[in-house]
Image (spheres, rainbow, N blue to C red):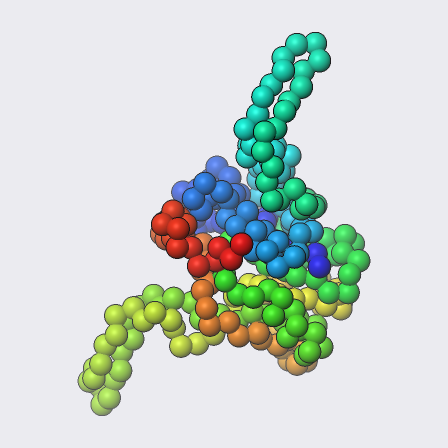
Length: 257
């Protein structure tokens, strides 16, 4: 099943990094967060990727064009007939990566519409290039197939950012500092999508998260696969450091491969 990844946004809230590279190329440990996301999908058998490029998309093209060079030990034979010998293999050799320029200022719905001609399957996977999870991708696909709706959204409970207050008659009766999980579910950004989505997408100004998803919800064509495990987006420098520290400690929950 093909995996579409939004990779074209400006990432303005992570300006410390995205001034120089696109957000999906911001490193978590020694590899870009995009690599971590793709490794998760590949673990579940989904190794055909379509990357929706935009802002600084050439950096993503360069990364994959030089993937062997940057991830392998090499020997160079110089001279009239130069040769390169790679001394090690990697588990990404069976990946197929299609990179499509979907425009500098195109919104998410417009980006998805632009890459639909490259997707022949009735169902495909969709996510953003800035979040990781330990959610079971194939379980969400089975859920989607059972529900028979246009989109299945993985709903997650993000880490609590603020303390919870219990209030009675204007008085605080209990305070919990930064709960491990917030009580409500949010859009986790991992989708299973039916090709019928094409009927809900507009032009380049179409924002996938606005009219398309709201219309699908109204028509009862949007269902939620609930995941209570690990999920973390990377919107800020603090979150980038959090993910990097988890990876470097050898305790990254999203490392299912």
